[in-house]
Image (cartoon, rainbow, N blue to C red; front, side, top):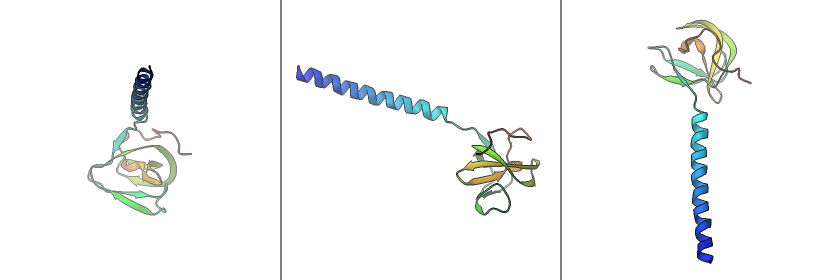
Length: 114
């Protein structure tokens, strides 16, 4: 009897682990963020905040694509795709001018950064 009970516990534990893995996969796919290409032939400065007065933290190479987690107003910039004050948050503490990102819109396409 004891061995039968142990088997149930082990199977329950394995089934529980399987459900955790399945649950994690569903959560990961639900959190998938769309990426957008930067302007062709352009290297883009990534800044620590939404404006040209913020420090450059890195430079995106030509042909890069970026996620946009949120957007916020900042310094007005004239870039490849026009003139705008919209800045895209592409990572924690990293922003690029939306004028260098092909979003298909002149306005906001993501929620405002809070």
